[in-house]
Image (tube, rainbow, N blue to C red; front, side, top):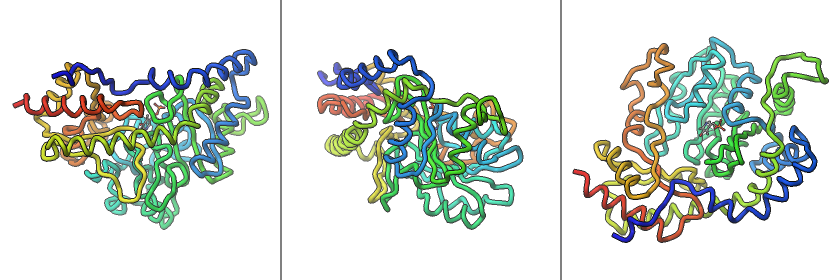
Length: 381
Ligand SMILES: *Cc1c(COP(=O)(O)O)cnc(C)c1O
């Protein structure tokens, strides 16, 4: 019973900051002393470093992952009447940004083992209105972009990676998220593996013309100053965010390794406790590199919500990502989707929960998580 007294939050950013304080404070001080809050050397520096990190030629810093999606699709010329292919089992922003451009997404159900869009179902929904294939690398593991790029190439259209949860993730052939499609979108929301001190995002691409267009559009389409050949918006990344993120980027690979070690420890602990007949663990694609933005387990749907409550009652963090797939969200009811349209997405929404995976977890905390899950499952009838 001692195990249940250990507190394990879903994410512990204070533990991370304790290791970074001495590196971050001087950068923040420097930016305050300079009072250079918009643009400047840290924004340009972070763009170069992220482009190099993911293996793309260009990177454009923006306000958030959501704005990365909105701006990149806008710059690609996605417009009302176009169809964009994605999965309904994702964070709302993937689909919300499409809706804001007047697009009705063409959903494809997920592969239940990876929770990523099932690439084998994509060809069947493509038609002459399809403008873009925009899969999500959900939870930190890459979709098979080779297959999607081939379909897109044959149709003369583009691919977009929603890589908000996947910076540093790799495919079995070694390509990194952000370099696998025509354009890719990242988020620096604090809970992502590379999280800022607030909101931020980045778009990467090898297409120099597109990168230039997006860098102009993020500043109201202004070039030169006060002359607008096109519209845009204020999609600029703050210098303070860029400065903090440059410090954190240096630690990112070590944090990924910490998360992967935790995942391996969980696999051993769940097996040791004899839980594998009740709990389905995340599937890792052979040869790929999963960065575990989330560690997602599946349980009997009748036990899922009581288990989350049991964990919360015993000071263990757990969260449901995502309880309602996008095709069933109330604000999209006009699209006419109904329960049963995407059965694997709906099943995942009913069966899954995320448990703590952040790199600073101790062995004692991991044991407490698994032991509390075991107690919870046996106490819920
Ligand atoms: C976090 C996230 C976004 C949005 O990023 P923000 O920076 O929060 O706007 C988009 N797509 C996915 C899959 C995400 O996880």
